[in-house]
Image (cartoon, rainbow, N blue to C red; front, top):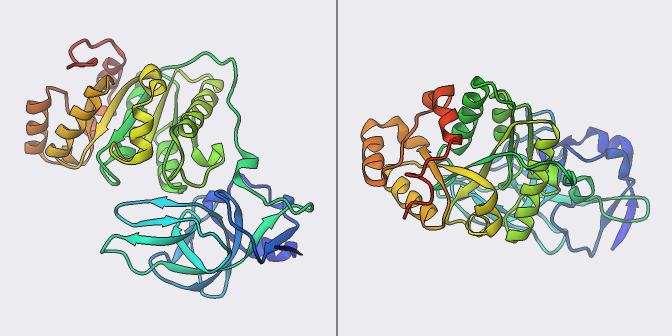
Length: 351
């Protein structure tokens, strides 16, 4: 391993991905090259070698920027779990790898959905490092837990899978709670760093929005339940610090995904969540998910998601589960959102 001097103009010209938004660029003075094993969250300067699925990156400001072969981008190392796109793992060297997510993730793709093109290839130029040779890592810029802040109610939005409608559901719930006069904070506590969900929650009217990149991770794939709990504690306590009345959090992927399942089965989740709203793509998924959630002792507040586009799917899910099914327009109304915060014995930890 060696560290070569980094030209500040070179770093300034690189397109900087959303995943790197908390990094102070001036901290980087050199590039680690040679024999080095990348760590999750390491910042990496990469040259675009060939274009594939991703022809652009989401910038720190949230705008998508086109990328071109031969230009340099600043991204972070991390693994990815995305059933509708890629599964990817951090490589064990600084060899060529893939752009696994538009939010700025350097990784090696091992599985892909059949609709995906080949991933965009990256030639690694080096890992950013400080003057003393210490790698620049997202963990260095993480928020800390706001110790001593009183807990506030937390509603979690979970779902059957990627693209089940979780973010749309969470944003609608933020709107409904705001319409009721509450100061609402929002957070995405697991997933892959990207700007879309972040700004959707912000646009919905959340007073403050955080995600796991603010807690020091480009992605949460591969983390243990304890670290996901730490991320959640950090982000919800920071929401409380902003004097919010309630937090709405989104948990990525489906309830059967490893990190999601482990978190929801933890004592922490069962004790601190005021309730869960479940987003599903169809009635069968809603029924299976509702059963799984209730079996584990959570209070299921309602069902929403893509299935609400079909009146027949709504009817099936409600009839079998006995749980109310809410469309986006309903969740945006105060008269729907506020009752979700009230005790509901019929829905609370039902057998």
